[in-house]
Amino acid sequence: MSDDLDDQIRENAAGPAKASGDAGSVEQHKLTDQIEADKHLAAKKAVSKPHRGLRFKKIVPPSAG
Image (cartoon, rainbow, N blue to C red; front, side, top):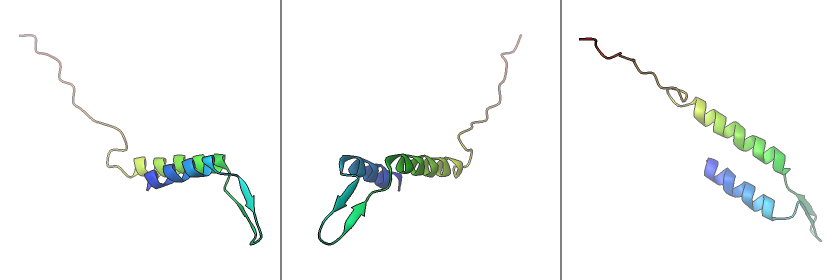
């Protein structure tokens, strides 16, 4: 899902912000809004992971003997 959004952001950044013709006019979402949407979706994906990016390990010091 995020790859599709990345591709869409690239397409929209390369194209014009507004276009008009005989049939009407079209306006894209602002690039800043698209970037914020991408960040939001990445954060939702990270939170859905079991450990939420944290790893727990038990530290055992070496023995003295």
